[in-house]
Length: 502
Image 1 (cartoon, rainbow, N blue to C red):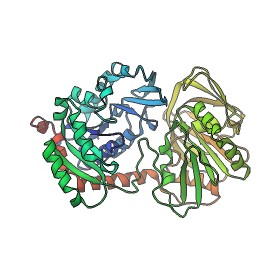
Image 2: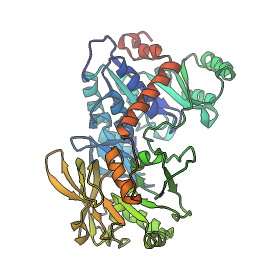
Image 3: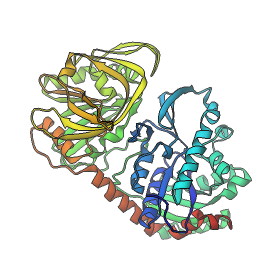
Image 4: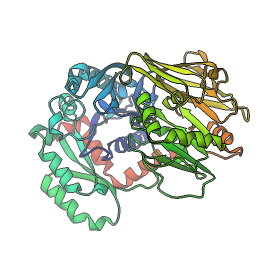
């Protein structure tokens, strides 16, 4: 949607008192609210640090949260929505992605260089969005009150001050200490930054609002800032999580048990949201020290550091459990890094993900993988090569590895990318117990998921199209925002003419 004729034009930044305070969901909800009112809206996050990402049609990589926010706006994905993405490969090192492409790695000591390296690109993206859309809704990162990060900040007040953007601060009351979080954050900021914060949103409230009212009155009186509303705790919100792995909220009478080992650098675990919410599937993310036994299907997920995560998997005893699972007829699916683990060897001669070297794989399929410095970023579609049932598949690829070997002759899917190039993806074992694929987003279409479940169970299990579920949940979120937030007050802050008067 391009710029409308409405008089509302401007931007607003949602910052949080902590990580996971609700910034991503708040921006997504406001994106859908304002889009439903006929405005052209774009999401923006100057700098994101996440292992969950999405691929644009042009072959760029952005944070998964900005992909969801773009959907909320009815937009195709763009690298301008998230110009800087940091993907940690260890506790001390991150890959730097600028405008969708990997350009460098930074260790903890040199992290301060990110401002010199990337801030100009951030401002270029923001200005393009400002020229094209009525409203740009900006998401901060972590907290603006991290004293040690203030000097080189491009993700919170460093950005807001540079572009003169108003800010609303959100905090999660479910964590406790919400009034201390809000007022404490404000007091740790510079005077100009304090004035930039126009008000607050409180997130995830449970209970009767009357019991909170005296605290809300105190907050407005003490801070001399507006409270734009208190959002309720929304159970079973079926929207992509930014980073945290959130377990199922309710037990259910399942037909199928799926277990996923939680690797230290697990990536794109949002792939599994359609499985988590399916009424006939019990999905368990298995942490270190726990067993994979009892599963009908084990899924090896993506990883940002495949060789290190493979070593971790073996140290946990999960390799032996996987072999036992297969001996008893269980099914195994490896996705992206998890697919690479299924082969004989993973070679990383350039040290793309960790130290240079090679690591022996699980040797369940006859192929090897070489990690290269050019990452494959593609949206693709095609068809399965499963014997039981033929159907269409769509998804996206994010990987540095190139896999080769006899096992790939029995491919998983025939695919075509946006440039009309045909190729084959993945592998299927001769007994059809094991599938490996590079495709993320495999479970989002009903036809694709039904095909996978038929492979596991031999039964036809009805599934929903996850894109339809996502649309419904975004509208549900927007309805809650309309009910519980002062949207007109927020629009006044966004509007440039009003900003000049604040």
